[in-house]
Length: 149
Image (tube, rainbow, N blue to C red):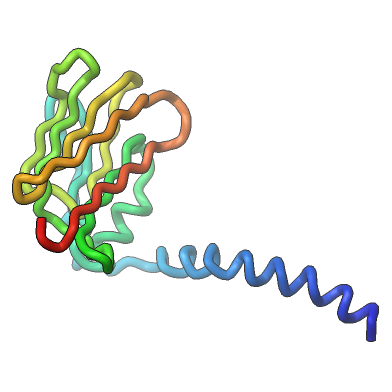
């Protein structure tokens, strides 16, 4: 009995640790493409996706490859996705490379290597972040506003 308990404890610990990963993988299952309206767009030679309204559209964006900046916009204590954000991405020297209105709640962008400033504005309230895009993994940016902004 002691031998069985010694074996089961590590197995149970691993199962508990992997449970959230398995749930996330299950959430990215099949997509009903009839409900997906997202298409790759370009501005100033920069490719991007903007959308994510509804589960199928959100899954479709999250399953795409080739974008090195992933932005998520949310509001409130429940982190509700919001699609009404203005986004400006500028090079370190101040030159705007992407200017989107009413974007989101997910925006995926393919930027050339370099340093950028990202400004996300909703109802006049701005959030900023600075990123250094290289050849490494995608940069994930989350912009969050309170319910009253």
